[in-house]
Length: 333
Image 1 (cartoon, rainbow, N blue to C red):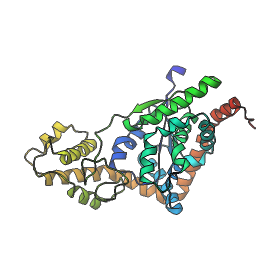
Image 2 (cartoon, one colour):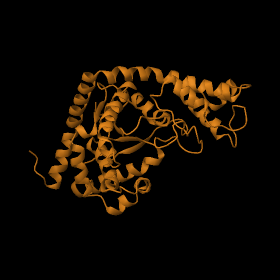
Image 3 (cartoon, rainbow, N blue to C red):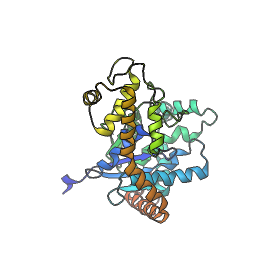
Image 4 (cartoon, helix red, strand yellow):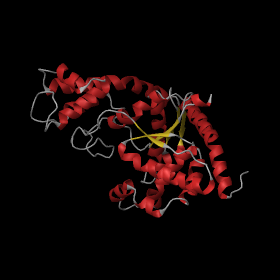
């Protein structure tokens, strides 16, 4: 029976913004597909979000919306553990313990700390520096074997492995050594306003990103305004980054290859193609958007799912925390 045991996956998402197409096609859309083959633990990582100043009322709303979105995307709370990170105090407890087994030099080399310090120079707080330890605690607490990440996030899994190995060497086998699960996805989704930049939540140009909750009219307007080149053929090529980005998005929705897309739109111009991409995206997001409206309006159901998820998360993590406490010399009650 042990041979048939499913591997456990942990993944989390911050609730600070509505996910855009890059987040959705690059990661979130794959989460529900993993549920049949893996034991999945999915979290809204609210503790991570306050390394940057947040408006409390807005953050509370975004936590609820982010949780509802996961359910709307197809995450089944009966199949997977779906919870809000702050509802399980074990994350903060293990993070403190692990911070005492993490070297200052390791954290100072983390590229995201350098990036965020530059963006938020007026608030370079200790949490911004140590949040990779909390990320390690998120993963190790559930003995996760796999962590879905993009190429640019592998550094966090490597740090998690270093911390786990150091602890295991000192106290004996305690933590499972997690491996990065590189999600096979479409090409990176780029900004609609500047196809040389990744689509980003922090982009100040509202026309640069399409979020998963944008209505059809908004989606169509943004795609019609998408930056392309002065040509007219729907083909890849040098200097055609804008049209290639639209082809990536269309391919992500329709699962068509670039060759198939070029053939489909042979003899048609950019206007026709932009309209087709917008309609395909709007159509693909509509079922999820309708699910979201239903779930977010049912406060009782949402609260029940959160409570159940918190209970499952605590049950799944309790054994690990007790084992760690015992090994470092604390007394479990």
